[in-house]
Amino acid sequence: MNEVGHVTELRYGDKEIYLIGTAHVSQKSVEEVERVIQEIRPDTVCVELDEQRHRMLVDQDAWKKLDIFQVIRQKRVLFLLSSLALGAYQRKLGEKLGVRPGAELLAAVKSAEAVGAHVVLADRDIQATLKRTWANLGFWDRVNITGGLIAAPFETEEIDAEKIESLKDQDTIGEMLKQVAAELPKIKTPLIDERDAYLISSIREAPGTKIVGVVGAAHVEGMVRALDKPVDRTELATIPPPSPWTRILGWLIPVLMLLAFYKGYQDHAGERLEEMLLAWAIPTGALSGIFTVAALGHPITIVTACVVAPITTLHPAIGAGMITGLVEAWVRKPTVEDCEKVAEAVSSIRSAYANRVTRVLIVSVLSSLGAALGAWVGATWVVSLL
Image (cartoon, rainbow, N blue to C red):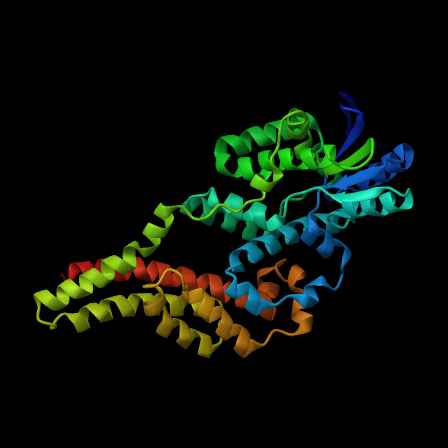
């Protein structure tokens, strides 16, 4: 192994591999990628992208094709909102530094085409990465991380080019990863370690004998360690099914509430049933409605939240946010312009509420959160009546 600047040279069988560690909002990274590919003239250039992120990077009209109804039906609201928030944070940095996020990856693709090299999208599908990461987290970890991602675009700390360049330094990265591993080890494994293995496996199997890999600097050290290790990319791309315990817990409150209703009916000859139903319906409906008001939902959506929350909280497969999101999208009718500007909409709270697409996402998330809190209040109230 040989290191020159941010380029790490490796040998794997008859292959020469050059890993360029980059920062995703660094003009120097763009220039280094272009220079190295021009000098080496590799057979193949591998980039830290999957099909979806590559399409979003090269297709300026990609957001026009966003189907908000499909996002809600597939229960991808929180994933999309988190991705938008992270993208907004990177874009905010890029605007300060005059660099488009991912510009070095786009430069790698264009430089590869200029020298006649193959291009390999070497990273794991983003949905598999997000879902494997999500599956590793507990409830409060999910709340904290989602809150951090949503707050990130609104951070006021100044980050200059010098700080960005320091993120490519191996010592700096090593310390950061140690801190992440200590605080959130469940995130580091799927988000960093698994992708290190996936990326190096894709690169070492790329066609040709001279390969350039363009990856975030945080991945280089782990990729070097995994160079000679066997990797099953199919297994790493598999989305694990929910554990039996997760399914059981999802049905726990609904089953307990139905049993409580039945017991109240039996013990009090039906006299308490109406009171118990109200004890369940009032907090679930009210809190879901209040949270929908906080999301600035349409009046029709607010009424819908109040009506459906007591029912959906008794069926874990159907969330209140799924229905309120669909209603909000139907009432507000996001336009093509809203879809085009959705990536920029999360750069401020005001713009997030002004854009119809992000408003739908916020309504869906907050109404679900209100219904979940109302379910705990309602469950406590119902039990107290037994």
